[in-house]
Structures are given as C-alpha cells and as structure tokens.
Amino acid sequence: MSEVRQLGKAGPPLFALLWCGLAVAYLVASACGERVLALALVGVMTGALLAAAGKRVIGVVVGVGLPIACMAWPESLFVLVYLPPMAAFAFMAWFFGRTLRSGRRR
Image (cartoon, rainbow, N blue to C red; front, top):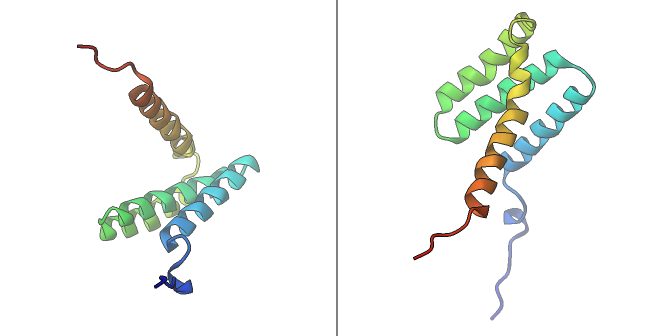
C-alpha cells in the first residue's frame, strides 16, 4: 500500500510564510531608506515572535504598540532599526562558536 499525501497539508506553515514576508519587507524598506517603515516592521516582527512563543496578548500589544510608537516618534526610536541585523550577527557568532569549537579531549 502506498501513502497518499493530501495537497492541503503540504507546504510551509502559515507563520513561516508570514515571517518570510515580513523579513523581505524589512529588507526592502531598509534598502530603500524608509526608516519609519522599517521601524514599524521591526515592531510587527517582534509582536509576531512573541505571539508565536505563546504570549499572544503581549505579542498583540507589542505588535500594534511598537509600530504606532515608531511612526509617532521615529527620531527617538531609530536605533531599533539596527536590532534585527545585530541579533542575526549575535546568533551567528554564538552558533558558529558553539559548533566549530574543538571537542573535549580525554
């Protein structure tokens, strides 16, 4: 007997598609120099990450509140635009430092 895969179950989950769309939108906004839009997208990404971690109420509050704050006071919160690249570099440093270090010798 062969297994039959349902077409509706195949493909990436909805959250992965949302996350990829937000990441591409952030990159485009950053490349075009739209700092306020990039700030708002950082807020939405943070809210989505919190909501995916199970903290849905806090995720909604951050996902809505941070973009509004970024649009209201963009000059005060411009540093937040640099958080995703810095977090990515920190993760890469941790990951490669952990996986490429030499093993224990006995």
